[in-house]
Length: 314
Ligand code: NDP
Image 1: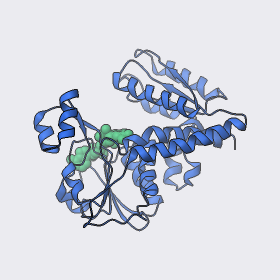
Image 2: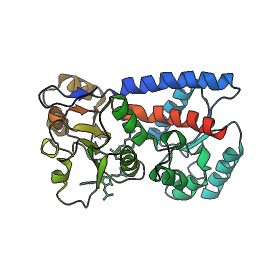
Image 3: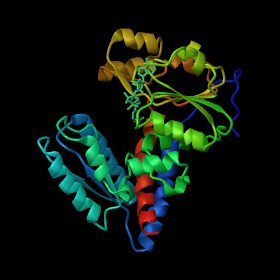
């Protein structure tokens, strides 16, 4: 069992290894589904040509192929109206071979995003953003029966598979977005942690975060959580993905780190999470960036697609 300690080096929670383990398990499940006469199917909708979104979507489609999941991509133009996109969603809702529908966010500003997310039939909502699925998560439905948002579900997989105690522990989540912060807090409550959610208006933030046995940072600000905000021995889950491009940032976050320097010189940028890497030194365990929570998100999307296929067939 994992034991946090301030006297030993912090334990690195390897998101890539955990994601790979989950994908291996899913490949077996998909093969079993095929034996039962069905193939889980995912439809991805990418509106317009946002380069970052194109990369994410390609990677989702590629992972489907690796696991034997059927996938198809729909690429309506950026000028598409909400009504046109609603029509596409309705056709996918009606198709038996499609188990999951994912709308790659963000959508163009003129599109009514909440309306589209609510138009996906909840049983195919593999992103877990539909209010019915959020409600089920908050109501404490069994995990096996809820399509929950992928990034927080990935956080829970990291904690559980690393045998980090959750029940009775003090968890602090910084960030209250519908995509990460709120569902992460709901999942931690369901797992019997005592949870505090912090946000931009929280007073005395550091005093609260220092009480955390499990600290989840989902803020979107490079290196926001500093050493003085962390309880020694805490588990830090760094959800942030921030690209830094300046020498000053590189020196601030990765002083003397030759590998980062080499990668920065090659690409002109590198990634840092919402936690200052210096703060990891006092942690009991932490997710690195990259290679931590980010690696889990696509694996959990695949898991939701397989789960949706199973649940729809009873
Ligand atoms: P949002 O911008 O939607 O939410 C950020 C949250 O941080 C808000 O609740 C905001 O508070 C809070 N916040 C901002 N400034 C402060 C502050 N000074 N003190 C305390 N809280 C603050 O971001 P997301 O939740 O979508 O994403 C968070 C991070 O996670 C980003 O870095 C993103 O890139 C990353 N991410 C990573 C994923 C992955 O796969 N690993 C997936 C999704 C996101 P308020 O509500 O008051 O404004």
